Length: 124
Image 1 (cartoon, rainbow, N blue to C red):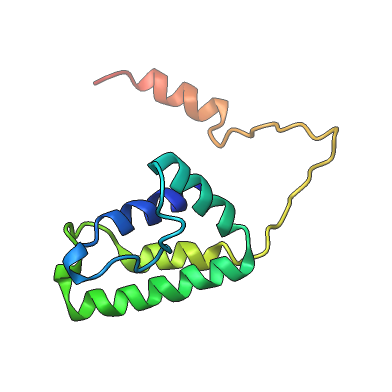
Image 2: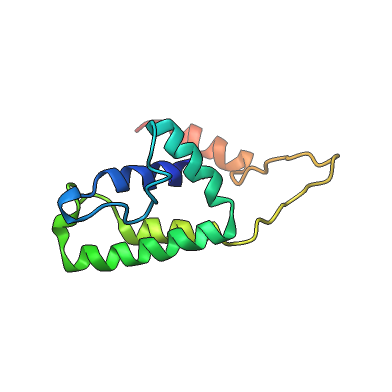
């Protein structure tokens, strides 16, 4: 969640103030230093209502950006990818637990005969 919080903070800071501000993050969250903002965003991402609000804001931001590319200073971010990452945070977390006595034993797909044959051929 820290990565997406950093992206949202950067994205908000990359918007041109001439065209408005606080497209995605609220003014309350945007107050303070960048690490503080990122921490507040990260905490709010764990709240389903706040997360839904970010998704809604990001969706609206993409529409506004498609209408007017000048609202952003830089154009290297994939906005639909950011929106998808936000939506992915809504998915339930699945835990995969292995048995405590589980031991991974890799199996080689090259037999000893194949190795010997390859080495006996030489470098040519």
